[in-house]
Image (cartoon, helix red, strand yellow):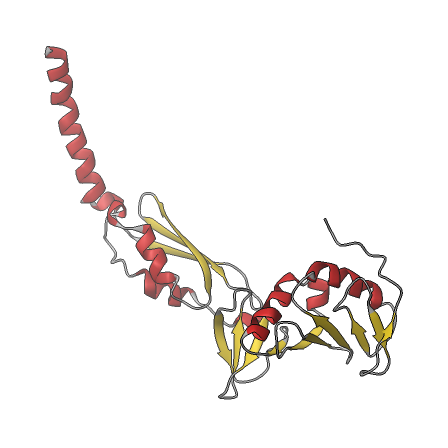
Length: 239
């Protein structure tokens, strides 16, 4: 019993000292906020460390243990360019804020004449006064817009680089305009990967129009209104 009392007599003051050091001592108080922002294309627009730092909102001198990383993350995440944010303590006096940016995949015209630059979730990253270099312009609304974004999301990079615009009036009539002037009838948002594989083969044949809406029986045409049916596609859908 005496040993227990002796141990308590030693441990309690030690715990009190450690608690004071962690919660009140200037030795572990915030001195530096280090903001690290992931890279992004020019289409994403600027995001500065000053913009992020302004939302950290933790005064210098605040003990690190009294800073809630989750609360800082919630504030920084309100920036439209931010996809995710992680805040960690770096002892003894630094708070590290790691920011991953949203990746722009399309520009959607608005009623004001501006363009909403959106990511794969449809979240608006920023507005642009005109078309945005490096991402396709999507002219669609409602279900058509949802289908178009889904098609862009599933596109391999080689195809995304070739697409200048996307149009859709419903979820089942997505059409791609390629940068070389050709048109691709994509159809619905189903079987996107299979359609891309079939289109890669079709593009070896020069044509004005490619139809992969039924990827098992694709078609091409030099007349935009009269596609020519091709033999059943030899490309099998990925497992």
